[in-house]
Length: 120
Image (cartoon, rainbow, N blue to C red; front, side, top):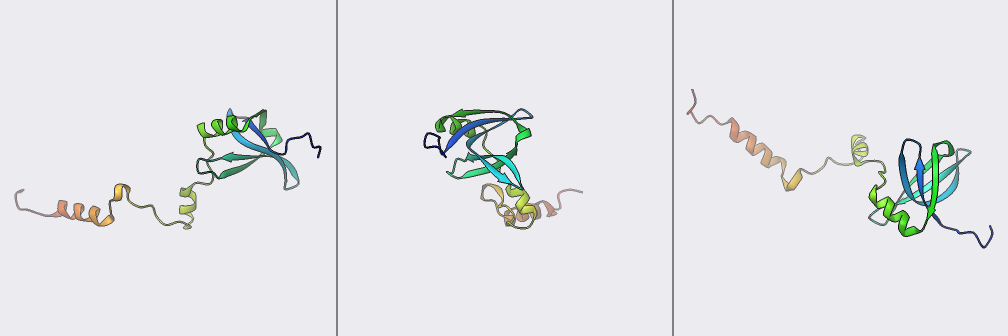
């Protein structure tokens, strides 16, 4: 590699279907096919890596890192969702919202079942 070339490149990548991703870009060989690798920066400092085939690309605009991070922050990458991992049984069920417990819900339901004798 020539010393004049950048080792790290950042870009906004326009995809067919009117979608955009932004991040650190490189080329990666996957399953014998050259792919465009985009490491999309997430708010927690990690990256979500996505690979795109050449036919999915519409345009690549090379930008400075702060610009790519700003664009990525506008529409963050969505790595595999917790719901899909949870549906496979790999994560526990979510906690009830606002600190409610199942006991509180059961108590409320039990209160509604009580017959206080006022109604016919």
